[in-house]
Amino acid sequence: MKGAFAMKSYWDQTIQTMRPEEVRERQLKLLRRQIQYVYDRAPFYRDLYDRHGLKPHQIQTWDDFRKRVPVFHKDDLRDYQKRTGDPFSGLLCVPRSQLVGLWTSSGTTGLPTLGAYTRTDMATAIEYMTRSYWDAGVRPGQRAFLININFHWLMPLTWGMSRRLGLRPLLFDFGHAMMAERIAQWILDYRPDVIPSITTELATLVPVALRKMGYDPAGVLQDVKMITTMGEALTDTARSNLQLEWGGVTVRDGAGCGEGYVWMFEGSCEHPGAHYWGDIGYVEVLDPDTGEITGEPVGRGELVASNLLVQGVPYVRFGTEDYVEIYDDHCERMGHPYGRILGRSNWRVRVRGEDFLPYDVENVIQRYPETRKAEFFITREAEMQDTLTVSIAYDRDLTRDPDKLLQSLSHALENELRVPVAITWVQPSEIPRPVPHKLQKFVDRSKNH
Image 1: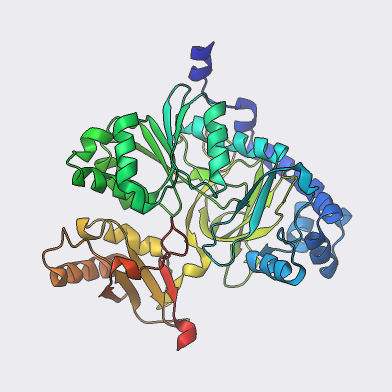
Image 2 (image 1 turned 90 degrees about the vertical axis):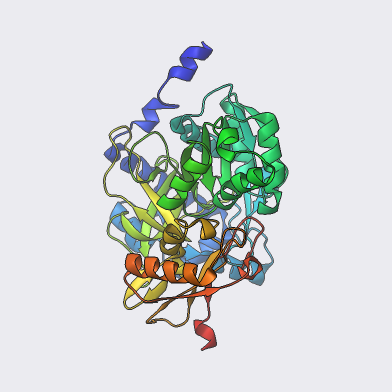
């Protein structure tokens, strides 16, 4: 029985192979139900909808939904929390006694907000993760090394996924870059098959740690069959570097905010993006400059997420501030949409009429061993500027001539991005780190001018 279980192609074939029109029909039905649910139970939504003259019964069609239901952001929740003292920002729809787990957001963009799971929400989220990891190729009996930070929303879900799939997990205490050598030692001792949800930064530092310990990283890490990266956008260059340094490992990228329930995970499909499960979450794309939703949920812009099944702390039309690219076709295997997260929508710098993200710079500088760790930030000097300003920390053990490296990097960036680039060397400690597991690769100085 176990062998037959492991051989099946889909975790839930009926759901995963739904036609796009079936997914859309289900989404509208669930959105209408969810809007009534939050209006009846959550003071934040009742206040928001009343201010916009919205009553749930008015939402009958997709056109009604797009035109009438307001989009909100985290700052709206923070304002509500400060005004009322409610740690759940008016979103809680069930008695607190029904909550089985709480978590906080990472605080990348400001004051952390509080999230929670009911037992049903936890099961829904674990089902989401289980589908994604099964589709990525994870199978029962594999050894899994879990490196999620304990406060993070991913920890209970990754643990739950590992139990659903029958993995053999080892839980690590704190997945921070400063723990790279300890993690490398545990990889030596435990020999995991899969490492779920490792940050891109940490995945880059593990081979460095092994080399310092006297090991050939590729020789040690070639036994790891798969890693899934989380925490920041994975560039094509970073993927190639990881595959090389980890001895040919399969790299699957994942991304998304805990509130969204539209987490994107790369599966076995061969396309330039990652699926999210449209029966659990609904995605729209917002133009961050105009504040308008695009006509279809495709293209580049800010990801707007709606939970379709969440009972405890639901989010409906939540502007996540993640800058995404959603594709307008569907893969042959599944009718669920796919795309990828490129960064934060407010981390864009406009140079000579073009928008640039840290992602664009990172894809270039990671081609150089001296800057492969991607410790850098771009700076917004003004709303419109003539030069892209980049501050980079280089690896002093690998750099013989910083001036020559700066000249080479400047030429490569200008050739790739087609705008003037000004590079400044900085120390790694000068790179902003708002939370332990993330670098902030954007600094806004425009308000100081």
